[in-house]
Amino acid sequence: MGLSTVARQCRMLVRKMLPRPEQAEVRVDPETDKLERRFSDLVEMCSRFAQDIVRDAGWNGGMAGLFDPVTKNMEIARTVFGKWSLDILTLLYMRQSAGFQEIRRGLGRISSRVLSSKLTRMQETGLIRRDVKPTRPPRVAYSLTDQGQTVAKLGEPVFLYLRLSGAFTPQPEPSP
Image (tube, rainbow, N blue to C red):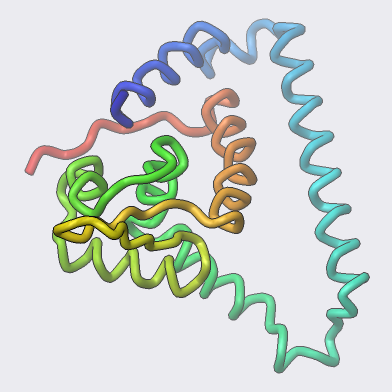
C-alpha cells in the first residue's frame, strides 16, 4: 500500500470523525472534547518529561557552550524535518526496510544525488542503518535504527493531533 493510499484513507477517516472547522464552534461533540482533553494531558505529560530529563541530566545555563538548545534544536530540525527527511522516515517506518531504488520510487520526484545525500546524513545521525546484503550483485537495504523508530513513534501523536484537530488541511500539490 503506497503512501498516497494511506494518506487518502487517513483523510477520509478524519472527515468522518471530526466536524468541519466551521461546524466545530456550533456544537460540541463529547467525543471530540474527550479527544482534546487526552491530547492536552499528553502535552502536559511530555512537557514534564522533558523538564525532568533536562533537570536530571544537569543541563543548565552554565553548560550553554555544550548544550545550546536553540542551536542544537535547529540542527536536529534541519535533519529530521528537512525536505525529504520526514518522507524517508515515514516510508521506512511503514515498510520496515527498503532498497535505494524502492525508496526513490516511493518518494517520487527526488533525484538520486539528493536521496543519497539525505540517506547518508540520516545514517550519520543514527536515524537509519544501511545494510549491505552478501548477494551478487550486492544489495543495500535501509531501515530505521532503534533511535529512528523512537523518533517516528514520537511523531505519531503530533501528526494525529494535527489531522484530528483540523489544524492542518492538506493542500493539493501544485502541478509541475
